[in-house]
Length: 207
Ligand code: Z5A
Image 1 (cartoon, rainbow, N blue to C red):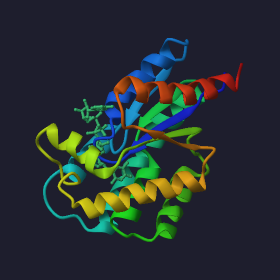
Image 2: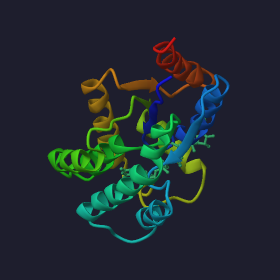
Image 3: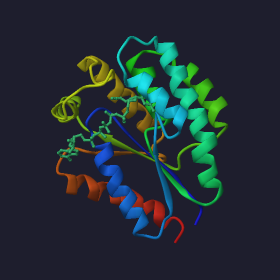
Image 4: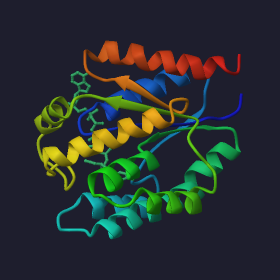
């Protein structure tokens, strides 16, 4: 079976981390060998960049965008492309759709600039499937804030997260084959049943 590149996206508190474990188990139970990774992060350099991005202090929007793409370039070279090349699936917590949502929608960076970096760094590589976990901003923030200490993004305003959500939903509407919006409100069991439908569809393509 051709290896697949799956990404998980969404705003704050949508349950990405919680559901990544479910997706990993679901795929492994069906005999799929996969690499689970995340952005920003996934490599020693990427994890250091992540520390900078989530830490305290102001970061210019252009600098923020370049940092996420710097980490992504290393991640693609060291983790994502090598895994796919040897037939392993890749399951990644956030990828370039997050740059469009957070730096584009949230910070107002022109989408054309992000598209240029995407073309340069990814050279045509795109996820096969992106699951966009979607909940109203108020619900996601309430879940995220219950967890306690907040990082630099989580301290942003509600208006910022409304723009992030709108940008994600717009991308899903523009690329409906790749980006599947999953209603992530409701119980975990309900959300996971919705996710499984998309995984089954992807798995079914090779059967
Ligand atoms: N970023 C960027 O700006 N540009 C980029 O290009 C990239 C990233 C790649 C770090 O991401 C930041 O990087 C991110 C954008 C920026 N912004 N922030 N912050 P991250 O993915 O590491 O951070 P995060 O969004 O905060 O993810 P998270 O901490 O892993 O949260 P989550 O995955 O959305 O949620 P969770 O931890 O799985 O769940 C939250 C809580 O809700 C938890 O207590 C769960 O038990 C609970 N939960 C989950 N599902 C349910 C349901 N269905 N019902 C009830 N409760 C639930």
